[in-house]
Length: 243
Image 1: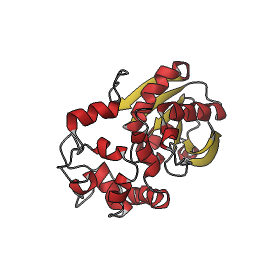
Image 2: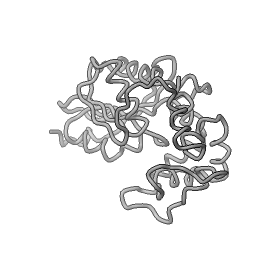
Image 3: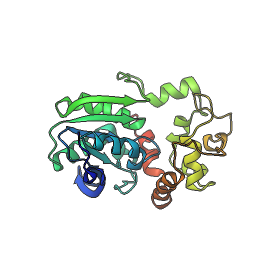
Image 4: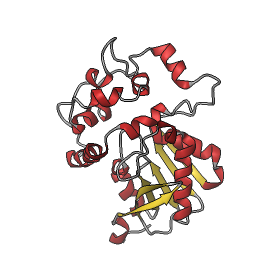
């Protein structure tokens, strides 16, 4: 276990991996193995702040990238550049550049989907897996978006995110901080389905206050990255889910 204050200092770098530049935050110099934290939608590396410091304090080397399309990582415009093969390739290239043979992997939301695929494609690089929010779903012969649209219709948020420009247009009616509050602090049924003719971002309420475990400064910092880069990169994950 490490109590050295230096282990709590988060360093930042950009690493060239799989044809793009990835921003990665890193800390921890203890004897424990590396831990790769993979964020979800619509988040950045900063979403893991509490876990980063806890793991570093307990002796782990913590590696936290902004996935492609997010934060200070490159954001290709083509939805076809956001398949799970691309994202897994980014992470394997990142581990290679950081000279990490194997790591514990922790994924949340879309990060969990990526983590499942990382285990399937490159089990040799994964020491252990913890996933949050998304169970493993075996490959289906049907396109995932077709299945979801058939069952839940156009009101489902995933269905609305499929069409290029649609979600971006509806999101643009709000500032980025409000969009994050609506999407991350959801006060709605488990299935995010808007009524007919209503966009999902309009259907979701804006919380009047933040829970104690969500510092407003942290949310504002994440919002600032979306103000700079927009939401197209993150939304392209949904547009590539059938590829």
